[in-house]
Image (cartoon, rainbow, N blue to C red; front, top):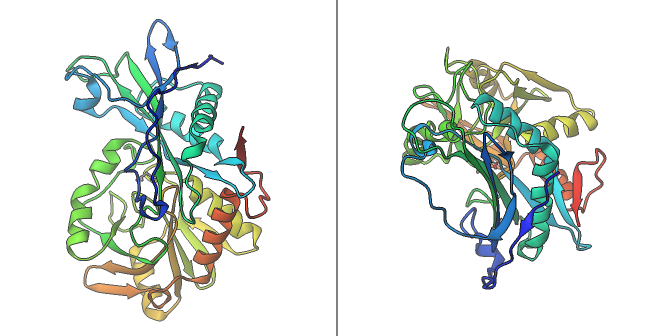
Length: 356
Ligand code: COI
């Protein structure tokens, strides 16, 4: 493992005074992590520095062909003062899956973990403690070769920035309304849907604008081939409770393998619920909504945690779910996942990792 060179800021910023007004991803802490890559040295010279802007050549490949990977994680301050990360090993493994898919060299897992722990430890006084808040962690890698040909870059920067944040949706835990999109698609099998990379998110903007104009906060994507099977929400994976069973689309290469998704599946199984990972068609969903067997729907994601869905719209059909309120499984998952993350609830699977 490489030693991180640390330079602390001489001008620390004032921390946000009102933790109820943090919003999501708007404020950044005093320091950042940065590690360059080149062919000769590989990943080398990791540093933690005062947070700063970057100087990049306008021809840097990331600006033109989008060769970049990112991750999302959170750090929490437990009531007993411990600083906790939630399943960081999963995010590190997923980051390297994304890297492989888009031809970015993998980051050694121990360097990645050391980077997270060291940076979060330096910035631990930035972790907000008000309910529903956390320190959002954004690791990312960009391609930096100054070159306009299409090929993988030979140089990269791996960085981590931190943002004290509140709820991802302004509505907090209030149920969101979701638009099922059957025109635009997010990803296709064989594409980059299961990698966490900017291209998947830029692909979602047009439909998101359309949904917003109609009064819906997010888009639920259908598969890119038949536009028939439910995939994910972009910022979240999606779960349904149909006829007493917890159902979520199975991973198929075009869906992001969410860490919170995996945690919901583990918890529901642990509670003895029947759980199915399978294809879910939009017809099945509409039929279940019509005959009353669609009992609950929620999204899962790092930023959004558990986000109850109060209404789904497909074409002219508006499906109200759990009478527009928070269903019992969504509530139990939210309480348990956030309880484990903040050290309040028992952690039966050993998911939290303490940062010293
Ligand atoms: C997450 O961190 O949960 C994300 O999916 C990234 C983002 C869309 C906020």
